[in-house]
Image 1: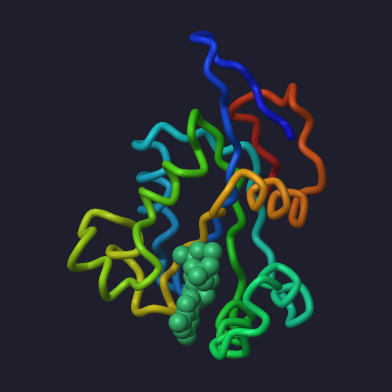
Image 2: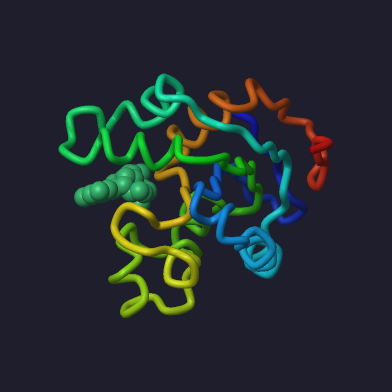
Length: 160
Ligand code: GDP
Ligand code: MG
């Protein structure tokens, strides 16, 4: 998996962030990007895409047997999403901390400074995604961007 070593010898990680349809439609992108930068992440790649039912179902395959699956797929295909590859030391866990708990209603109480508290609506419409492990991050980054070479420069952007 693509990793880089920073000058102090610790390992950089990549993780996948998604600004979900409600986040994008609600014009939260700039505020979320400010949090990304203030939290020390580099943006390696980003792309806007419209998921169809098949791609959304593949992305969320782990939840296919859940009662909320069809509702989740409807939500995730309701408009375009902004998909972002983030990099920093401990990126996977740190991004999960920055976005806050899954349920945005609870996030507003327990993690008022989190992104989901800022722009999420409820347990489903929580405005952002974050990979839950290094393995998930690898799978999810490949899903949208293919393989990203380990020598890729921090801060390199795709043209939108
Ligand atoms: P995450 O890793 O915090 O995004 O949460 P999960 O992986 O458990 O769930 C994936 C996504 O499904 C969440 O971000 C929500 O958008 C949605 N979701 C999770 N749990 C529920 C639920 O109980 N009901 C509904 N309607 N949606 C849910
Ligand atoms: Mg998850």
